[in-house]
Image 1 (cartoon, rainbow, N blue to C red):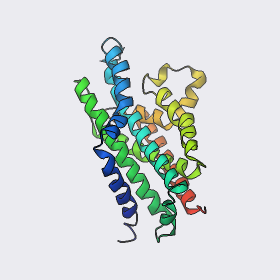
Image 2: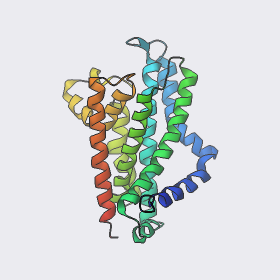
Image 3: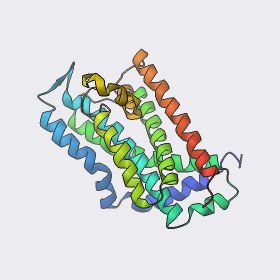
Image 4: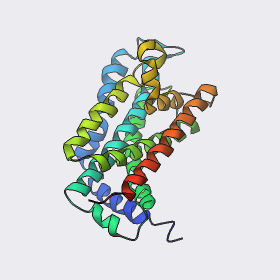
Amino acid sequence: MKKFLEWYPIYLREMLLFRRKLFKLGYLFSAMVIPVIYLIAFGLGLGRSVQMGRGNYIDFLIPGLVAMSSMSNSYSWVASSLNLNRLYFKTFQIFIQAPISPSSIMIGEVLAGMTKGLFASLLTIAAGFLTSSHFTVTPLFVATLLLNCFLFACLGIITGMISKSHEDTSTYSNFFILPMSFFSGTFFPVDKVPLSIKAIIYIMPLTHTNILIRKENLDQEGLLSLVVLLAFVVVFFVFGSQLIRRYNE
C-alpha cells in the first residue's frame, strides 16, 4: 500500500504551494484573463450573430475555451514549476534521491498539474454558465476534460525535464501550445480548414479534445478522437517517466 501511495508526498507538496496562491487576486486573474478576454471578444462580440449549426457561436466557443484553458494551465504550471525546481531551487534532486520510483514522481507531478488545470477550467465553466443558457456539462465532457488535463500535464513534465533554462519553457510553449490554442478547433470548426494544413491540425492532441468535448454522446468520430488522446497519454507518460528515470544532473 505504501508503494502505491509513493506519489502522494509529491502531490501534497505541490498542493500546499498551490494553496498559498489559490486565493490571491493575481493568481485568480491570471487563470481567467485569457479565456475571459476571448469569451468577451469573440463570444459576446460575435456569438449572438454567428450561427454554428443548430446553435450560435458562443455555444460553440465555450467548450473550446474550457479545453484551451485546461491545456494551457495543466501544461504551463507543471513545465514552469519543474524547470525552476530542477535548475534553480534544486528541490527536484531531492525527489530523485528519495526512495520514490520515477513513475511515482511522474504521477504526483501530473496529478498536481491536473488539479491546477481543472481549477482554471472550473472558472471558465462558471463564466460559460453565466454567458450561455444552452451550455451544459455532460459525463463525456467531464471525462474529456480530465483526460486533456492529464495529457498536457504529462507534456509539461517532458518540457520541464528537457528545458535547459527557464526561457526554454516559453520557447516550447510558443512552438506547441500557442499554435494549438488557435488552430485546433477552439475558435472555428476544423472541417473549415484548407486540406493543405488539415493533416497537421489533426496531429495536434487539442484538436481531438475539441472534437470530443463538444459531443453529447460517443459516436464513431468521437471514439477515434478518444483513441488518439489515449495514445498521446501513454506516449507522453512513458516518455516523461523515462526522462525522470534517466535524470543525472
